[in-house]
Length: 231
Ligand SMILES: *Cc1c(COP(=O)(O)O)cnc(C)c1O
Image 1 (cartoon, rainbow, N blue to C red):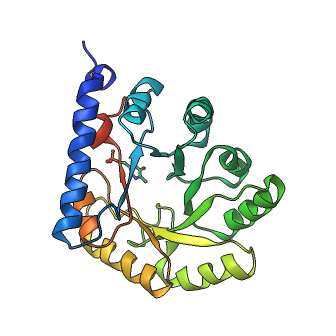
Image 2 (cartoon, rainbow, N blue to C red):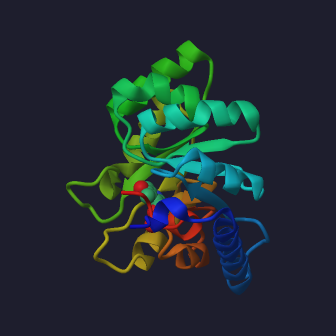
């Protein structure tokens, strides 16, 4: 059997990348937003280095990964060759992986608890290297999902600054799979405005246009760029 995920030719990847770019531009125009005010984070988890290089060669520099171990295996060599790369951590981050995470990620979108804030603060001091930080918000209050609950967000943001001296630049959310995403996107935008945070990461392959209409500054798109994942 031919595995379509592994055999997607380079030309089809650039076609889908350009389609996504076009749809992002379209959604920005439709919502009367400034050109280029939404960054495409190409989510490359479970994708091969070959495919990633195809996307880099199509002038895409911002990527997202979910797992520290996978990112550390794939990205140091790529970053050595392509210094413009900006790598976002978009998966749950364990405190004991913070050291490695800081070595490879430029943005961490999933800060969601005190123990992680503390571990990040300590390691940032040690390495003298500070990633951009977004706080993940559990807008659907799902017990199994990461993210700060809406009721604790204000206090958590304050603690990040006053206790851990961390500069938070944005918010991120993953709406519940079984609900329309728009109310969650609207809520995240409200909080970003309330706390004066410039970055709003929301929207994936199935809903990035809605997210842009509702103010996303970063959309995280995987399968619509790369094709289906190998797993
Ligand atoms: C995998 C993943 C994405 C990308 O998902 P697609 O549906 O492939 O676009 C975006 N955000 C997060 C947090 C993810 O884990």
